[in-house]
Amino acid sequence: MRTLIVGAGATGGYYGARLAESGADVTFLVRPARAEKLAANGLVLRSPLGDLQLAAPPTVTADTLAQAGAFDLVLLSCKAYDLDSAFADLAPAVGPKTAILPLLNGMSHLDALDATFGPERVLGGSCAIAATLAPDGAIRHMSELCSITYGERDGSRSTRIEAIDDLMRGLKFQARLSDVILQEMWEKWVFLATLAGATTLMRAAVGDIVAAPGGAAFVAALHTECTAVAAASGFAPRGVVAERARAQLTAAGSTFTASMLRDIENGGRIEADHVIGDLIDRGRRLAPEAAFPMLEQVYAGLKAYEARRAREAA
Image: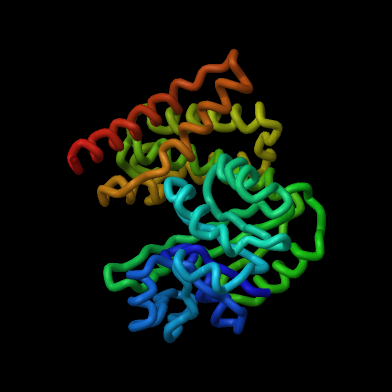
């Protein structure tokens, strides 16, 4: 199975490197500067699951991708704000039988992928990993947490999803084929929107928030609003999942934060529209009688950060 990894950053680089480590046929679609660094230094992982250095892994750029032909699987793990450029870059890799496995947060990327490449090519997927790209270009995996979930969106067990499941098994991450991938994607979105919303608005970890007056109540109310949007969309979180999420989101002493908070603290770009804005839009459209004051506060704070960042960069 010829697999194209779009990017060689913290997420795509980690999963792609582990696939390559197993002997899989993996190519990385990267920008020219990253291609030069990978050719010179290799792809380096520093991980509690085992360090790895791939010497000069196969790479292509947008200018050379067409020469590589169509791929069987495209693993898409870019940030939502890079989707438009990623679509244009990877188009030559997508043939009639190509499967695209997106690992982005939220749901709106599925609509964009369907419109661009056709829904028959687009799988459902999600991942959980704590990793970052170090200044020297190495990928630093920060905990043993590392999983990837995938499935056909209609819940079927197709030949291609079985082949992808075979490809992902036995590697240094937890791989799981899901028959309810859309349900699981929504459950992750509800959890992430609550976590990102609370920690970015309060600029604090979960334990700090719940220790503050009214903090636990705020988190609970925000989770309720996110859950209401999922329910209006036909994907209410399952009881045990909701209970587990609420416990994690209100755990005393927890140092848990969202990566979006780290992005803000580093002055980086954020997925405000994809993670929070789209959730509000869906809620207003599908449940017009409902109110989403907590989400709207979060969104206002994120957009204010984006406005300030843009002003200071001008």
